[in-house]
Length: 231
Image (cartoon, rainbow, N blue to C red; front, side, top):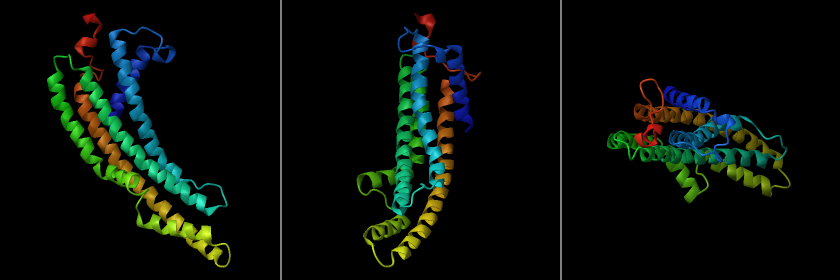
């Protein structure tokens, strides 16, 4: 994600130059430029957090809980699949919120109208690109927990395990283990493919953002009303 890394690098320079790691910015009185930079940093941190959680889900699905209770393995799997889609939904909202924040920070700048014109296509592209994944999350949150043929099948097996306390319980457990491995591998691959799409969406987003938030030297542009020279 070249464009994301370019933006991260610009923010990193700000953290170093302002020595933010060694300052208590909550208690200090900040100048206008520092207020602007800290707003960008705080909100970007939430985007970064969502991306980290989305990417680590693949690892979670690669692990199997160390338990003799087979039902817990299924619950673990389903829990992380649902949270994966929740995190994509959160990312989508945080991307929108971040762009909205930046546009508002420039509302008193001479370039404000131009920035709005450049920002609108970014809103539209990110929303459309994540639409399919967001709609899946919407269904499982508002109508059903989650809908997938293989997961429905394993859910029935899970139910059978709960009520089978006598003959053939080993047979049912064997069915569950086979289905569990198949479904876990399927969703690991789905997440890998989804993450490639998300990386592309994020890179397109930051390419648009960088076009007006970074200057020719890849430094953050400061709105006129936040420049110290205006004080």
